[in-house]
Structures are given as C-alpha cells and as structure tokens.
Length: 70
Image (cartoon, rainbow, N blue to C red; front, side, top):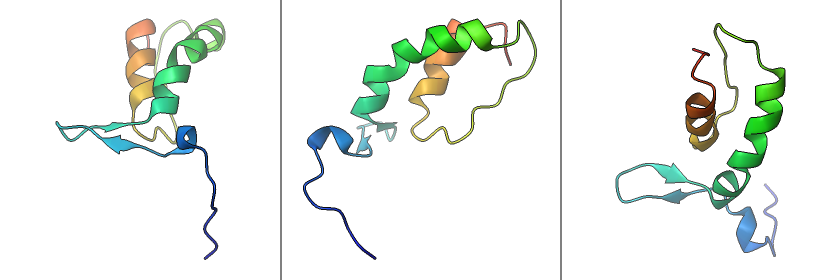
C-alpha cells in the first residue's frame, strides 16, 4: 500500500475527543456552508439518509437545521 506524504495538517481525518467522539476540523469548518444547499433541495418532510457520515458532525448540524426530516 502506498502512503501519501506531505499531507497538509488540514487534511487529517479525525481526532478523538475526551468523551469518545470523533472530531474532524474540516467537518467543523464546512458544516454550516453545507446546510443551505441541502435545505434548498431536501424534501419538505419525511425520511432522509446520510451516506458516509464519517464523524457524524454534518448529520448533527443537518438534523438541527432540518427538524422536519427524520
């Protein structure tokens, strides 16, 4: 397996928080900009599925911003 070298610090995958949660700096930075396009295209009510949620940070923000979705 080939491993990339010289990866920028902002590309790190995730850090373990003291309470066991994973936290990715990139997810923290881009969660808010993702909400508006999703709000404009999401169904008005019903079920939604997030695929490849990684740390789960985006889905937490989306759930708070779109409470009409399950």
